[in-house]
Amino acid sequence: MADLGVLSAHLLADFQRQLHTRVADAGFDGLRPRHGAVMAYLDLGGTRASDLADRSGAHKQVIGTLVDELETLGYVARQPDPADRRAKLVVPTDLGRRQIAAARAFVADIERSYAERIGADRFAAFRDVLTALAAPTRPSP
Image (tube, rainbow, N blue to C red; front, side):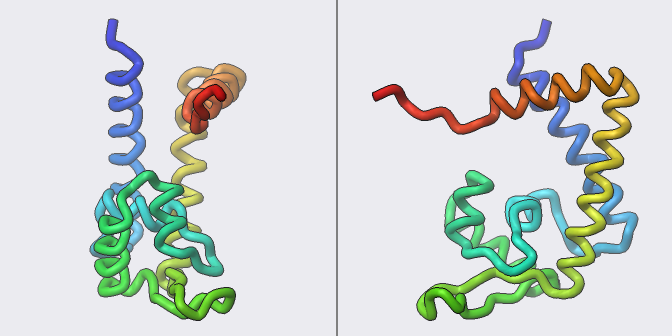
């Protein structure tokens, strides 16, 4: 029997394949799976790159490269952070907001399909357990 890491990897690969196929089919050109490290964690009002790195677990330099790519593609723009003029916010453009809304709908549909496969109660329990396991752990004092 496959271990949890292998099973998780297979589920993630299936989920990402479905999501990115739907995003591409919806006409959101140029996006690649790696762009999810920004788009999946982006607040509609804007997010600092350092917060995107923290949320996604990606290195800050990787986030910077991804933001550059997404800016070139027209999905995000950098704007001054009104709370700290030295900082920049990564803000979704109109195209970026449409992509985020579409991706959220696609995610909900994919999750519904998983729930149909195993039953709504089992899926809800699975989601609860996965959420608990994926939560950041803190070392004991």
